[in-house]
Length: 94
Image 1 (cartoon, rainbow, N blue to C red):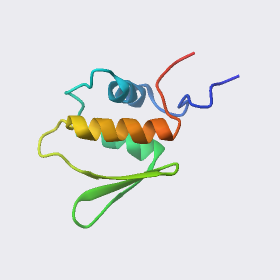
Image 2 (image 1 turned 90 degrees about the vertical axis):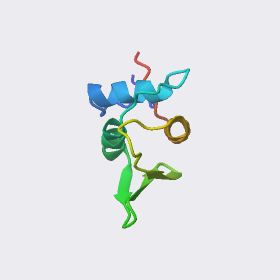
Image 3 (image 1 turned 45 degrees about the vertical axis):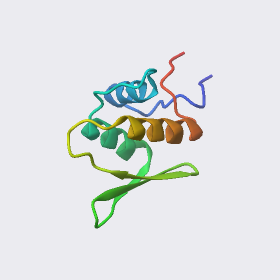
Image 4 (image 1 turned 180 degrees about the vertical axis):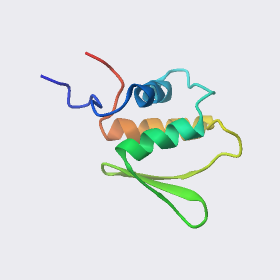
């Protein structure tokens, strides 16, 4: 039997990104490309004409702005953590 909240279809690289998002205290070296790669695999991601990214996952929806540097900021990590948690995603392994 598998845990319904375990993202079985996520690659090991994306599972590592998910672990970084869940980490307490919040990690400060989480790269945008890793985050958007994970979201592309598990969510509906659409880039708007203004460069913002609309992410829909389960019943949740957030709008992300690509950071000026390669790493995402702490608030974005918290927003992603909330979205993923509400959609039932976690990185725990059985």
